[in-house]
Image (cartoon, rainbow, N blue to C red; front, side, top):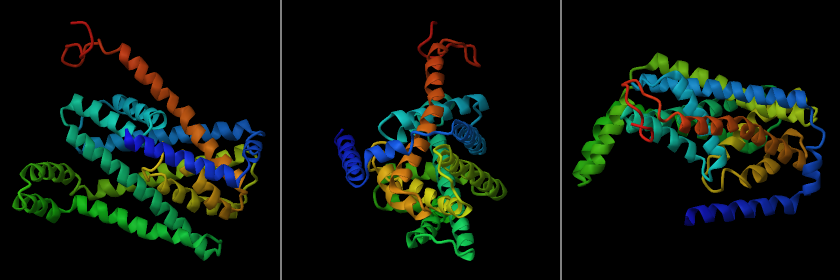
Length: 329
């Protein structure tokens, strides 16, 4: 509870900071002439990215030996999106997916490791895409802030984490080291975790394919922001689009910091400082990101509907012919 209130204070302070620098009227005015065709396209592209993201998670789960039906995996993925937008913590959606699917498959640790792998691959793909665009922008002499170079060490760090998780040597040494330190219970858990990640160790071709597919998913999500900008009536040039393909991932990486409630306040303050490098005025930058967030919220509402409908289906017989818990017996 203390952490929640601390995040609430930080969100409030950042919103106050943004409104002390920018006029709320100007931000609102930047959203008063919508082009609904572009905004509808943004919603459709984001929806396509969500379906692709669910498929990515399903493939990783399959490699981990999780055999839940694809339809159920998609349902849980969309419910996770709903929780991410309507619970006061971005981890809420992942927690729901892990608990629900882990209970059904009797492999909560396997689902946890697969979900963590999915998250890391997504962040790595997003960062790699930004670094590639950054390199192309440098060749084309398209200006970007010096802070954009930070995406290179971020990418290096993400690759290092993935390499450590998939490392055979670490997987064999870490449990033994923990036992020598007298941490037997933690050592046992570490051994189980390294065993789960070991399922991906020899799937080099699969992992490369998943990473390439994830880059496509992340490109769709970045495209959502560009379509939202067009939907708000911003006439983006080619140069601005290239700049945003670097700046928007930088914003997304910053939103992984667990310091606010669902990124509220952090999203607005960072976008107001960062996206102006693409030639947007501060109010336009904030309006663009608020509208992009609302597109995600609108799409995620179907996850709430799926959750509600799922509650009414709890009494249906499962594959073994027995009713699930909560149904009539």
